[in-house]
Image 1 (tube, helix red, strand yellow):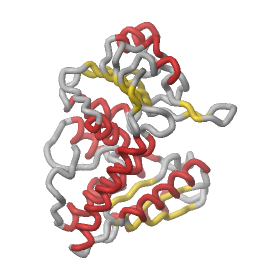
Image 2: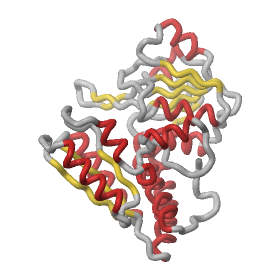
Image 3: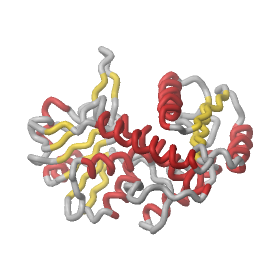
Length: 296
């Protein structure tokens, strides 16, 4: 049976480290500032934003949520983002997805200063990531959190065969760039990858990362024995239960390491968001964090 990767425990440890670094900033007169813009009343977004606020307050990050109704004009959001870009008390900005259909989400993402782009979605930061540039820049929080989890479990990617399923800008694409930069051989699969090819590639994979929103897409029969399986998906079933994109029951006996759903990748995303916020605050205010703090 596979060893479970305890995302809750790893996230708890990371949040404790974030709190220590935030305290270091506080001694220098700096309070890390996070601004979250929420448009509309999507229930899942409300819960996620509330969890961010709660987690931020516990580690010494000043988080503010700016709420707009679903009919808010795109120009209003752009004006607010420009204001936050100029506000020296705000180190990190994000616009919670999804946004109403009349708003161009790409335009909104590009309006956020690359230096405050805590989600790592700005084209400039994505370009740096794909070019594997040196220096600090924000990286999408879920992929970065996955890299932290792998490092915690002693999983190195150099020379490994990595298969990623799902090519979103939130997970798949930045994960592809991170794995390549770590010297893995990487395949990025998507909805147009034929089933037989997907199965063939998965059978050869040392590390499998799945982020599709399709419950049970990957089964134990797809996996190479001993593979590390990272399940990013979270799907609510008709009976109210939450399951991942990997069929856990059949995958657990085959895998070497596996993340549960819930309690795997999910907790790492918010913890990594707070980590990035603190790093951006240190960068903006010229405060040096402890050596070895940055995991990537």
